[in-house]
Length: 193
Image (cartoon, rainbow, N blue to C red; front, side, top):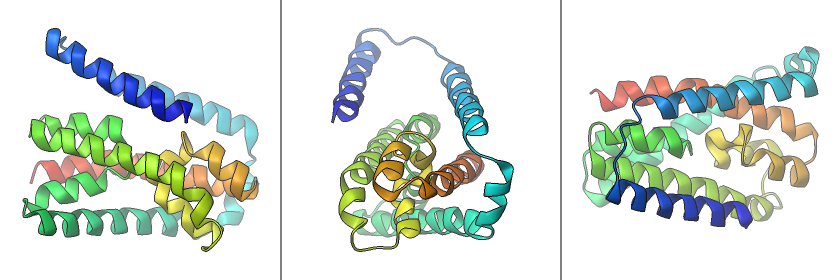
């Protein structure tokens, strides 16, 4: 709950800062994101052994690819329902919950769809946090990881680990990590179409 409140407060503070003063941040946000990923990698390296990663096998690739495909199909479906260009629905879906990248990247091409991409992907993270405990009771533990998208390697990882068990921590982290590698590539390709 505190995380959700902090996210909303930071969004509101950012809107006011952007309204009254629009600093040129350039690529600063990307540098911060890479630093965060690096720090998470250090933490993971201290926590898991390489042999545990090998045990996951094909699931380590299949699950994130299915998540990306499902997210993009959801984006296309939403675009059709809202009668917007498929490109933007596809791009927003391809964000897979990574709101801090999706919003700014799409905003370079369309501020409106950038805002929508940010809100849709932050919504995905919040929905994952709220629904994970409920869906865990009716769905396989490994499959339910996909609702968190890329956030499974950071913000939703503690919830997945606590409720799903420590054996899911590695699967969730790798799921989020693979998506974190894929999203910038896929998203950049889509917005340039």
